[in-house]
Image (cartoon, rainbow, N blue to C red; front, side, top):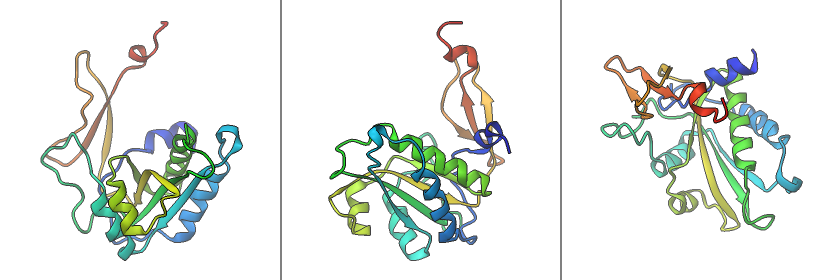
Length: 191
């Protein structure tokens, strides 16, 4: 699969086939990919909390907010929640800020998950202190991002945003998730 194919298939999925587990070995393989990505000054401050068991997943789920543009949707229901999570942490003893490391690692993990046939969602809307308490994460670690992973249970369609159109994603009555994207000519400033 080409990098373009991976990028186009790597969508923000918010509904999963919860009954299909993600093996810990797959999570370890994804973290091994991230471990080998570039890091500012090669400090490598990122650490990871992995979860692929229902009990730990149940502690993580209520700490997350899902799909802010979908005002009438409270998030995935039981049976369509993620089968696994990766909580990306910044080791504050190594560096106070992780800069772009977290984005590089998160996208690498998501592309690797896509290659494995998984889908996911980078969740930045996290109740960090609630999650810290639920998972007993030390104050040494800054909670940066949560990646929700599993077998996708929804269709996500990219569409070009019309001039003057909205960036807000939406769902149609047939439960297809639509994501408007700005055109290439709208994002290149020196055409």
